[in-house]
Image (cartoon, rainbow, N blue to C red; front, side, top):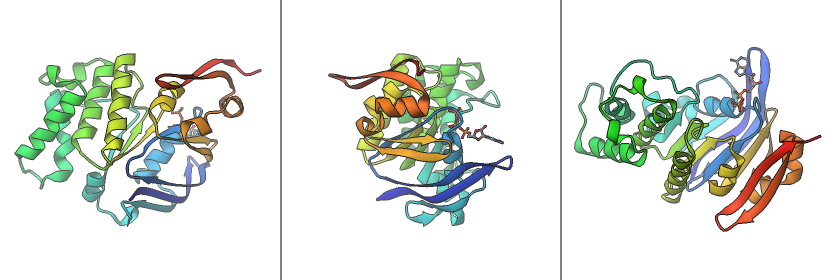
Length: 257
Ligand SMILES: Nc1ncnc2c1ncn2[C@@H]1O[C@H](COP(=O)(O)OP(=O)(O)OP(=O)(O)O)[C@@H](O)[C@H]1O
């Protein structure tokens, strides 16, 4: 099933065209890495897909027109992890993660056993249960990121859009998160994550979409997309590309001359 279909998406910000007719479709079971240089349009694409910024073109979520979908229904289909990790008020970690269940509950209704199970599972998977009673505002940057990811997981949507989810995480938690996203995809969900770490993207994503200057310039399996020539022309870097037992290795070595 196609969980997200985008057709001819055009978006302008501050009067300047940023996305130039992007089209893509993402199926159940895919872990898609959105890659591309700074300013390529990755965040804009994610935010436009969520309806957070105006754009022209068609967006369908689980086969339905996203523009006509009520916000609560959209939130049951689609969870979003924004790039900004700001937490506005000092609620406990547990309370913050439990907000992920809001789209599944009538307004002002309490949590039921199924909600509690999802919240516990999300906290356990992101290893934040040990500090569940601490105010979320007091945590380190990486801990905050894990709590916000746990909130998105508690939402239990089939489609997760994540903007630079590995930013600020140490290597162990980066790998844990990428493995978790790969598992979610293997369970039949769909994860679309913007990523700057090409090594992680190559190792864990089932598909990479390379964006440059608001256009898709490559879309396919990591080995097809990440070629030395593309890394040179799009990122302006010379990179080492190799194979290990753990998968493809991508290591930018120098700025291309
Ligand atoms: N509010 C805004 N007003 C005007 N231009 C904007 C605005 N937000 C983003 N842009 C511009 O849109 C372009 C795409 O930005 P976007 O944040 O989508 O890039 P990105 O690929 O996510 O980059 P990064 O990897 O640096 O996060 C950039 O040129 C950026 O300067």
